[in-house]
Image (cartoon, rainbow, N blue to C red):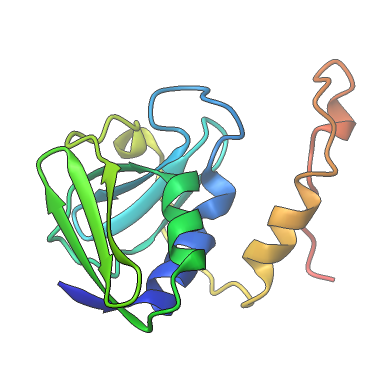
Length: 153
C-alpha cells in the first residue's frame, strides 16, 4: 500500500509518549498495529490512534528503527507492506528497508480501561508531554518528583 510518509510519521509521533525508554515488558519499545489502530504501552501510559495503515497490518515493529527510517526518507509517498515477520518500507529514492516485525501483538492493550467520554487535546499536547516527562524524577521513594501534572492553564 502507498501512504503519505509525513502523516504516517505524525501518527507514530503522536503515540511516542507511550513508548518505554527500556524494555519494561515485551513490545513496550514497539509500535503495535492491531484492528486498525496504532498502539504503544509502557506499563503506565497507553497511547492509541487510528492507524494510517488501516487494518491491513497486524504486528509490532521496533519504534526507534521505524522512526529513524521515516525521518531520514525524503519521499512524500512511500510503500509499506507487512509480510510474515517483516515490515517493508520502500521509497523511490531510498530503496527498500526491511524491519523485523512480530506478527502477534503481545502488549496488554485490551486490559487498559477505556473512558466513557473522550476530550479533544490541543495539537501541542503530545510534544509537551514528551518534553516534560524527561524532567520527571525516577526515584519512586520521592513520589512527587516522578509525576507530571497536567492542568488546564
